[in-house]
Structures are given as structure tokens and as C-alpha cells.
Length: 436
Ligand code: S3P
Image: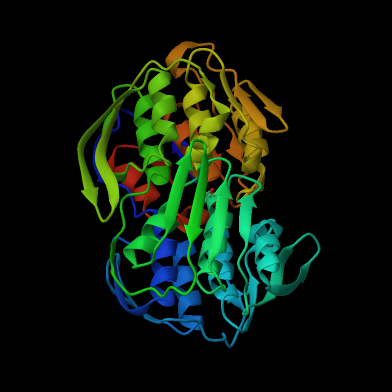
């Protein structure tokens, strides 16, 4: 798939449903007693895998219409008859392992080549302290078989900033004797805490910035509810940055989630001089959403504060693209977690940008994009970029291609459907020239 230099991008679009919230809606719906109706669910591959997994664990999951899903939970999981294949989804497998660990049953998990290469120890360690057991490949890799049940209370300090680890422990804690406590040294996305409350659970959070202490008392059960999934800021980032770097553009993304723990990218782009406006701020289903408009801007390089990383961890690839069109260097530090995402995103962004003529410096947990020396529209492009099947690496380089001098191609564009199935159509609607 190839993106080429395009005229002004213009229009108003909706971002697809938030991936993090979509996974959680299905999993909590399956853990709950009764019916959960979900609106605006992301129908990407990752979330569909979680839907199939919830069926395998005994819930009744039905698609009622576009983005409208019904989950009927039994208040617990039963043993699946086959292997649970979570595809590319780290969030799916880690949260489902946590949820499943509360029940006395065995389940075997696997995923695609990327997921089978990712570390699961970060979730298995606390689940093991609670009493779960497993057998897995070297280094805590999938496939693995987990045996749950009989869990005890722990007070767990999450060693790396990870909402997936925090969420796995909280979901396991629902069925642990005495509940569970989680201490975060840096705050990460709080969708699990918010959604547990929406499903009727008590979750007490004490903030001592940047630390958060979360207490989930034991002996709680969840009741089905309605969930309205807001637009994913991690997906909205692509059309918004495309507008910032393509001359003459103005693009509005409606209904974007504005959770403070997810919008570090907006702060960073603002510091770079981006012309962004946030309007129509409203509350929807326990989250703040808004319409966000981006206009083509003369960007300047910045140093991103490392403590901002958890609030934009999935957005560094597209930030690196914005930085390629900015004047002066953009320094991103404290981003080592990017190396254990769907791919090693520091390495692949450094390689892809370098192949497109952008100056980059890669460190163990940092990436510096030197920025354009030829003004705001001076990225050469003209490369075919290796994505290792990573959806965000593919989308980032296609956005780069919309504003670079020569076209940019990506391998494995099919993987974009894991998080943003309508990406190419949406970008074409705005005027982006992307060819299959
Ligand atoms: C997610 C948490 C983040 C993020 C991922 C979604 C979640 O991962 O990168 O795309 O929904 O909890 P980590 O928990 O590994 O930081």
C-alpha cells in the first residue's frame, strides 16, 4: 500500500471506538451477571478476538448492528473447550488472563507471531503471587496454559507503567479472597477503574501524584450495564497529524475521548505550535469527549517530558512523523516500553524515517527526530517501509507519505484492521491519496 503527496485534507470524521474501552466492555460484560449493551464498539480484529474469547469462556455475545453488541454474562467464566487465540492483541490476552485467573479452570492462550514474542511475565508474576499457576514458553511467552482459582489478596506495586498489568491484577482481584490493592508509581489509563464502577463495583483510588493507590475490596460481583464507547484518541491522532503536516488542511475528528491519561499527544503537539482546537466538550458514559480540529501548522521540535510517556505511549510513532516535518529536533526520552509493543517501535520508526530521508537518533529508551532542514514540507519519502505487522507503524508511515516529496509504501497493510479497519477509506474521504 502506498501513500503519495496529497492536496489539502479537509472534512469532518469520527474516530473508531476506543480500543482499550472496547476490550474492557466485552470482558466486564462477560464477568457480570446479566446483560450489557455496548454502543460504538471498535470492530477491529483485536476486539473481535476478545469477543470470541468471551464466547469461549461461556458468555453469550451477539452483534446487534454496526458497533452495537450485546453481552450476556453468567457472573463467571467456564472452561473453554479449545485454545484462546488473541491474535495481535496484547490488551486482550493480558486482561483476559487476569479475568480468568479468578476461576478454578484451565485455559490455553496463544496469538500471532508478534503476540507470541511479547512478555507475559509482567502479568504472570502478580497472578502467581495471588496463587495462579501456569506453564509457558521460555521468557513467559505464549502459548501458555494458566490455571486459576483460590486467589489470595496482594498489594502489588506495578514495576513498569502499564495499564494492562494494573487491569489484569484488578480483574483477578474481583475473585480473590480479600480483594486486591494496586500501587502505580506513574498513573496510566484508568478505564478499568472507571468501568468497574459503572458495573457496580467499589474501587477506591487515592491520588498522590504521580502515584496512585487503588483498592478493590473482595467479595464483589458485577451487574450488566450500558457502555457507550468514545472515539479512540490513539486512532484520531492519524488524521489530526495528517492535517497538521499537509499544507492547506483542516480536519475535525468528532467524539474523541479526552481522558486526561490519554491525551499527552495533544499537549505535545500544542507545544510544537500545532493549531488545534477542542470544542463541544461533553460527558458521555462516564468519560469526557470532544470534537478536535487540526489545521496545517508550522511545527517546531520540542523535548517531550518523559513523565508524559504513559499518557501517549501509543502515539510516539505518529508524533515522530509530526516531528519529521517540524523545524528543529524533537527529543523523546523514557519511552523504553515502546520496544515491547506490537513491534519494537523505536527501532522501526527510526529505520522507516531514516529510509525516508529524515534524520533520527535512536537510544535504548529514546528517539530523537532531527526535523526537516528544508522547511515545513521537506521530507523526501520514496521508501518501502518494513512494519513487522505493526498497525501503528504502517499508519504512521502512510501519513508521512501524504506530505513527503516521493510516495511512501508499507508492507503488511492488512494489519491496520487490528485497530482501525476504516483507516484508508477515512483518509481518502479527507482527500488523502492512498493506493492499495
Ligand atoms: C493499553 C495499555 C497500553 C497500550 C495499549 C492499550 C490498555 O499498554 O500501549 O495499546 O488498554 O490497557 P501497556 O499497559 O503495556 O502500557
